[in-house]
Image 1 (cartoon, rainbow, N blue to C red):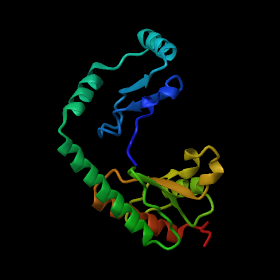
Image 2: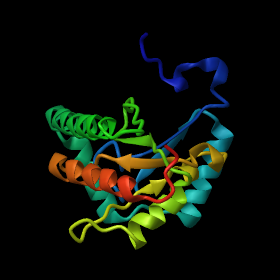
Image 3: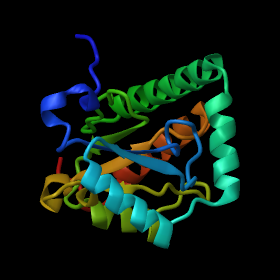
Image 4: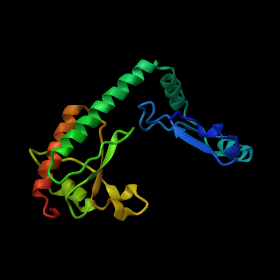
Length: 187
């Protein structure tokens, strides 16, 4: 199926708003530079007034954004391959842990991981306060905060493949050790 931009549908032009940022697309996490586009003239006039009164992108962020937009496509292809390899390492490693379900994300560098535990919030605290293997632990994001209904992520954590593969392997190994000694496993 061919991609068709939402803004190209004339019959919906008053209802479509596109909001995006350069942060993840251009590997610039933390960069506070983005855009809002719509063909709804009334909305855009209000956004422009708000922007004139309250908002203004930092000059440094603008310079970084401009540089990112000038990078050759080959740079981004390398980045895509790097993240694909990291995600593959993370998902493959997680899949080797008994009771863990880690679906391969489609187009992202993070995934929601189902664990054989009673409560992801409790498990995340356990990792920080009670678990150490050779003086190390791992920090995870409990899954509940990523759902409209937090109960949907009660036994899930969100992991991101944002570091080199060796660190991902080590983090998954630590996670496996932590699960083995976690007192509130469900299976």
